[in-house]
Length: 518
Ligand code: AMP
Ligand code: MG
Image (cartoon, rainbow, N blue to C red):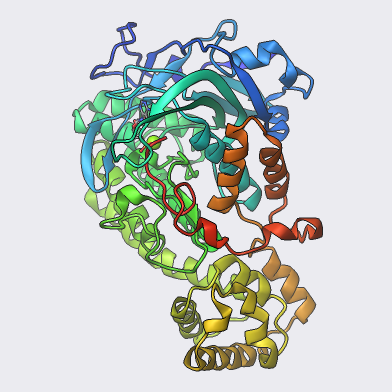
C-alpha cells in the first residue's frame, strides 16, 4: 500500500510545542502531535471500497495486515506524524471553551487524482483534548457513523466519508443513558476521510483567546487550500470566504431538510467549514413528519436541535463564526449583509427544494400556501415522511390520493373522517396545480424520485445491524451498506426496507432515543 502523502495542515499551521500526551489547554497552536493508542486485538470488519479507491488503495490492499494496523492506529505510516486539532465551540448555545479532537487523531493527508484528503481515526485513544473522557468509541456509535456517512454521500448530501470500521479488541465503559448504569461495550475505530475536518470552532478558539495572528494564519491556510477562488489574503477575500461558508452551510441544511435528516448536535464544533455533514452522533431520520422532533435525548428539554429548527441554528452558528472572523475583517456591515442574505436565500431555496419534492417546476405564487397546507396535514396524524414523498410520485389524479399514501400512515385504521377530508382537499389542490405543469406524469415521477429517496438509514435498521455486530455477525452491515449506495433506485428485492419504523423500535434505546454517549 503506497500512498502519496502530503503535509499541508501541519506544515502551514502552528504546532503545540509540548509533545507529552496530557490533557491541557493548548494555546497559540492549531494542533498537537499525538500518537494513537495500540489496541489489543484489532479487526477490520468493513471497508468502503469506493473510498479506498479514492485514496489509491486497491481492494486487495484493504485485506492486508498493514492496512489493518494503519487504520486502527497500531502502526504509523512511514514518514507521517499524527496530530489532534485544537478547536473550541458553542455547545447548546453557550461558549464551552477549548474542546478539540478528544478522540479523533489525524493520520496523514493523501493526494490522489487531483484531490487532497485528510484521513483520521475516531476512537483511537486520548489526546491533549480528551478532557475528562477516554478518547475511545464503542461499536454501536461507530457502526452508525460508518454507515451514515456513506449513506449521506450516496444521497448527494455533502459529508465527511468513512473508509473503514474496525474493532479495537478493547472493552470500553459507557453509561448509554447517563442514568448511572455503566457497562462494558466493544471498542471500535472508524477511519474517516474528508478534504478538511476544520470546524467553525477551530476559528472561534483563536478569536476567543484574542490570538489574531494565528487566526489569520488558519484563515489564510483555509483559503489557500479550500477557497483559492476568493483571492489572496485580504479583508475583501475574508468577507468572500465567509460568504461562501454561509452559502455552503445553507445548502447543506436544505439537503438535510429534503431527506429528513436531523443532526442532533449542531454545536459550532460540529459545523464543518466546508459545509459537510460532520460528527455523526445522536442523529436520526424523520419517520413521522414532525418539525419538533429530535433524536437526541440529551436535548429533550429544549429540543434546540429539532428538525424544524436546523435552518435557524445554521444561521445562529454562522453568527458565531462571523464574530470569530470580525477581528481580521473589522467591518460589521458586510458580515451582516451575508447573514441577512442567508434568511432571504433560505426562503427561496427551501421553496425550490419543496417544489422539487412535489414535482412542481413552473413558477406559481400559490405554491407556498400549498406546501404549508401539506406540512400542516403531515402533522395531523403520524405520517412517514420518506414513504409519503416517495409514494406521491405515483399520483395521477385526486381520486387515488388517499389510497396512495395510506402506507405512510402509522395507524391507517384510525384516520378520522376529518383528517381524511383535509387530505382530500389537499389532493384536489395538488391535482389542479399539476395541470399547470408541462411534463408527463412519467417524467415528473422520474424527477421526483431523484429528490425523494426510497431508502434511508432509519435508526432501527442501524440498531439491527449493531445488535448482530455485537454478536459477531457483520452481514447486516454489508447488506445495509449495499442498500444505501442506491437510495433513489427502486431496488425491488430490497422492498423490506421500504417500510415504516416497526412498533418495537418506537421507544427503544438506539432507535428513537439516543444520547451523546458514544
Ligand atoms: P461531540 O458532541 O461528540 O461532537 O463531542 C464534543 C467534544 O467532546 C469534542 O471535543 C470531542 O472530541 C469530545 N469527546 C466526545 N467523546 C469523547 C471521548 N470518548 N473521549 C474524549 N473526547 C471526547
Ligand atoms: Mg464533535
